[in-house]
Length: 608
Image (cartoon, rainbow, N blue to C red; front, side, top):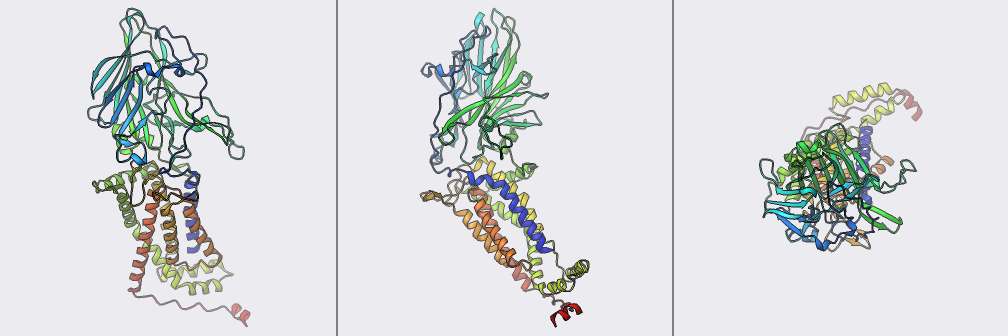
C-alpha cells in the first residue's frame, strides 16, 4: 500500500510541476546576457482621414510627423519623470526613477531609468479618431501649447478648436488617501466656443511595454480590461500565425482585435509585461462613455527562420463616445494612470481590483492558486522588511520563508519518515504475509492491517507529505514568476533572482548556459532519496524513482533562481530533519518484530 501511494504521489507532483514548467526549457539566455537587437520593419502607411469638423485640425499620419517640431514638457517627482509632448498633448515616455533599465545599471536607476512607452510609435494617451471605413485608429495630433505649469505638481496643455473652442489636457501627480508616487491624474476637456461641436468617437492610446526575457511565452504581456468581476487579456499570440497542436487550433495572424464593452462598464484598461504595468482607471462619469478597445501590434521584428514579421508587443486604443456640445458647453474624460511595477500589495491599496493585473497562474490551467500566491506575497513582504539594510534582503526573505514552510510541514514529514522507517523494520513479516495469502487478497489485506495497527504503522503517511507539496510548489512558482520586486535583486553569486542563476563571467561554456542552483538542487534530491527508506521499492522500481529525480532538475534548469533557492534550502532542511528523526527513533524503545507468519502447507509441499 505504501509503495503504491508513494509512487502515485511522486508521479503526481512531477507531472504537475512538469506541466507547469514545460516552457522553461524554451527560454532564451538569462537577463545578464545582452538581448538580441530588435530589427524594426516599416509598417504600412496610415490612411489619412478627413479631419472632423469637431476637431478642426489636420489628421497627421504618425509616419509623417516631424519630431523636431514638437516640444517636450517634463513633469517629475522622486519616482516618475513624465515627458509630455506638445504634438498631440500625450506622453512620450515615463521614466521610472527607482527602476533601472538594465542589470548593469541597477545601482544607478535615477541615471538610467526604465522607460515606459520607449518603443511606442505614438505617445501614451495620444488621441486618435476612428476611420469609419476600416475601423482602425487614425492619430489626431494637433499642436498644443503650455497653458499652465506648476513644476513637480501639474501641467496643462491647450489646443485650439474651430469656432473659438479648445481642448485642454491636464496632468497632475496624485495626492490624498489613496495616492501613490506612481500615480498620475489626467483629464482631457473639450470646450465648445461660439460654434457647436458635433458628437464624435475618440480613442486614447494605452502606451506600450516591451517583452521580457523571462516571459518567453508572453504569459503577462498584453492589453487587458477589468469590469469589477472579469479580467480579459488580449496578448501577442493573436497577431502571430500558429500551426496549432498537430493542426488543431491553427490560425492566421489577426491585424487587429476589437474588444467590445460588455454589459458592465470597465473600471480600468491596462498594458503590462512581466514586471511593469500602465493602468488607466476611469472616473465614474468617464466609464459610461467607454465603448470598446482596439488592440493592435506595437513592436515587430523580422524572423529570418520563419521568414515573416513577428509581433513582439501590443498596444490598446480605448474608445470613447463624446456627445454633441452646444456653444459654451464642455465634456471631460478623467482617469488616473498608474505606471510602475506590478506589485500586488501596492496595486491592491489603490483599489478598483487593480491587483488583478498581476495575473497569478492556475494549476493545469484550471485550478486557481491565486489565494495561496497572495499569502506568499504578504509573508515575503513581511520577511523582507526584517532585513532593511541588507543588499541580499530578498534572498534572505526567501530562505526565511523556506524555514517557515519547513516548520509548518515538519510534523507531517516526520510522520512520513517514522512510518517509512517502521515499514523497513517489518518488511520481513510483511513479505511473509504476502507469500502466505497470495491466493487470498482479502485475507492478506486483513493481516496487513493487523500488523499496521499492532505496530502503529501508517501506510498512507508516505503519500500525504508528497501531495501537500503540490499546491506549495505551484503557488511559489507563480509567486516568484510574478513578483516584480525580485527584478535585478542579487543574492550570493546570483545577479538576478527573477532569472536563472549565473556566475558573472561564467554564463556559458561552449554556448551552453551554466546554472548552479538546479544542479545543487538535484544533488540534494538524490541524497534525500538515499536517506529515505524505501522498503517496498526494489530493482526496476527504484531505478524509475532515481530517473524521475534526475529528470526533475533538467525540467527546472532554467527556472527563476528564487524558486531554485527555495527548493535547494528545503532539501537541505529535509536532510537535517531525517537525521534528527533517526536519532530520536534510536533513543526510543524499539518494538519487537512480529513473529513470522507460519508458512502454509501448500508452500511447504512446494519447497519439498
